[in-house]
Length: 262
Image 1: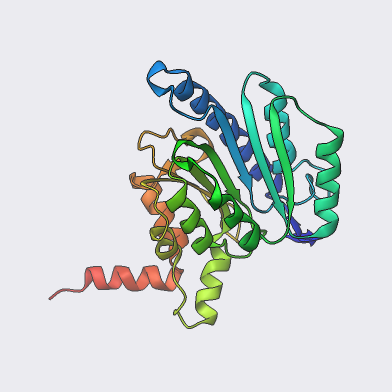
Image 2: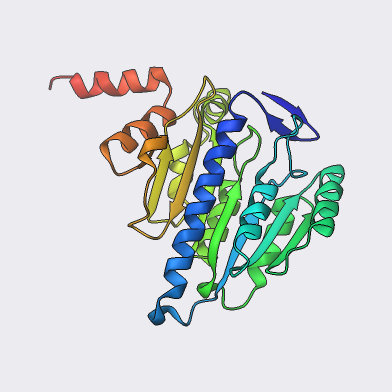
């Protein structure tokens, strides 16, 4: 995996962007179905999107990134109202993304490139009124480092109807635990902090175990099994989560304990 101006890219980036685009399209379909129901007249009919590692809109190879994928989705659906917040801490990336949004306005969108670290900029959204009626998605793709789980937990506690989509390297999280002699929390420990009732996990890719985790409070959230996505409370999903949560040695120790006779 390489980096340029803080933007990570590697062999699995194209697959990541493909899956992100598919999940975003699914989110829009669900949002449309929910808000069109007469009984849901009280809901905010604007789809809200938060990209807390936005980058400049494309990776160093020229492939479009998550902000431009979202922009393209919004352009395809002019009858839906969108609000997008793209958080970026690298000044050169922020400037490029801000210029793109300025040059490509959409009548159905309120899009904003926000400069600064998400630790400081995302909490500004906590001041919004009537957040209980807001639907949408927050996307975290921190380029190999551990996601800001405490920040995501705080956000989830305030925006219960905004789903969380996290792209991470499980291997890097386990390496951090190894350096700290196992004192660092496991991935499961971190996810347990976040108030989402239902999690979907993707089969990991590569030695770094790149995976998606989607947290929602909708228990019937559909999974893309054809693309390797499974609910964590399914047999396959639980096996994936267990595999990326523990090292090989830890799993072997657990098996030995299970097989120990009294």
